[in-house]
Length: 218
Image (cartoon, rainbow, N blue to C red; front, side, top):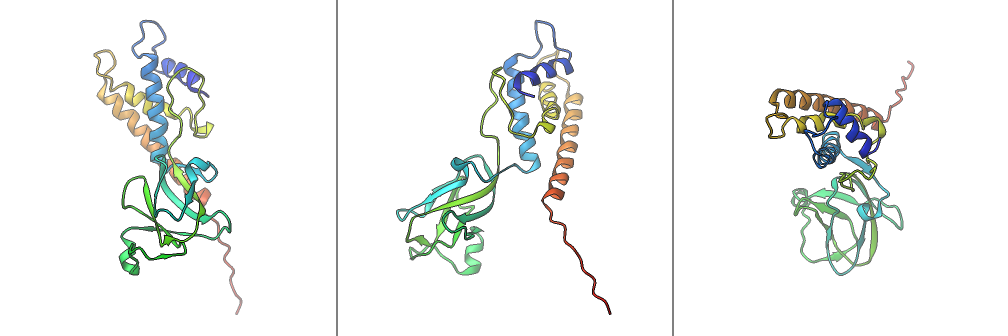
């Protein structure tokens, strides 16, 4: 399903198929855009390890501060692109416990420190060599849904129709006597929350590696 098909489905579900429409195309595409972002946020993010603009950081010897792509919700892992060796990802609060400080001492890149500033990280130690660092992340969608150009969604196709839950929630909050319905908005918010909880549990099971337990004899 693309953005144009979802617009038609929204109008059908909301019984808004005759002009003058209660919701404009611009309203509906905005709802679709917000619904995709909301579903992604509430289910943990889109996993990504291959979009270089998002997942690669070019470390140089000139600075220890680097920008993170604004779509990143969580960094899962980091590793050197040349050797594949892992690089630790630390919260800023963990630095003091390890007695690590940003004191200007140079050395081998050992950790990426997050949580100091939004959309930025700092490397430790101050790098003595250039290196590309590859991340695996959970992120937000990269492209805004804006018009009827048959735009594709970044979420899996199995979730496309579920976007209607949040879209209908937003639609019923439109400040107009013919559209505003607080109870309906709450009802579809509850549908959205229940669906996202189910998806999160399914994703948790998919990512969990089943362990084989061997029982020894006497």
